[in-house]
Length: 175
Image (cartoon, rainbow, N blue to C red; front, top):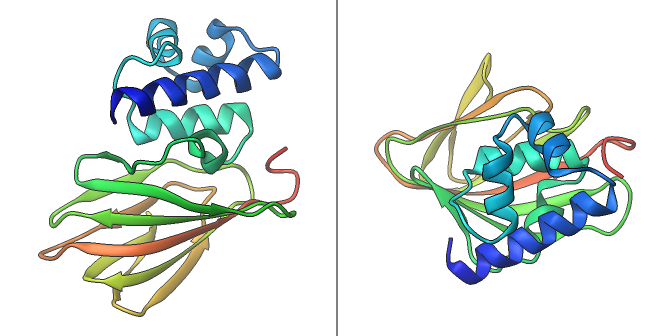
């Protein structure tokens, strides 16, 4: 992530944390990260992983998209790039992402907020995806839906995979 995007994320994260009356120590402990790492992130430094950003969003009780909405560049790590396309303004909250996974990539995603549902539509390539105990192989044009409030998996084999990800948060699962 570039310096400008890190700064934007840090300022937005700090504002969300302060709006909820949480100290650095409280949010860091709840998200399972070091207070010093959270402090650096809020200052626009560091290199947060996608999992760290997800954990912070869950602990702030906001959709991932709300936390990353001000960032225009794709977020990425270890062969995975993610970009928020749009965020609904109605209830339930709906976020839509573009995602691209490099060949031979395995991404284990942490559980989202309670009741969250995820739908993937594969645009190109081949992808194995779903809850960790029930994955399915998708080919271009295939769609799968699963409960995203449990750990889940995205895995590519020989090809790049490009997909659309829609997350519907349960009423009460987000503010």
